[in-house]
Image (cartoon, rainbow, N blue to C red; front, side, top):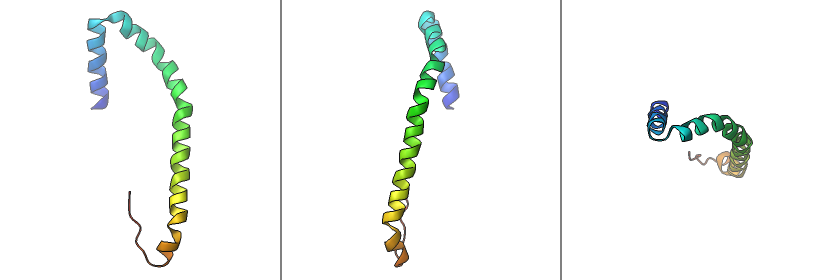
Length: 70
């Protein structure tokens, strides 16, 4: 559904302002390459915080507490 919405918005942009649509089409790979390191940092930080959460709740789980899903 997200792909269809994106395609429809691109077609609307193409009809309204085709030079901007061509520019967006040409710059999209560059934007994707720039966002890759930020995604990797986000994945790494999510893993670190998950590990810290598991480490901090380990004593409670060992004593019989239940883990809450978040």
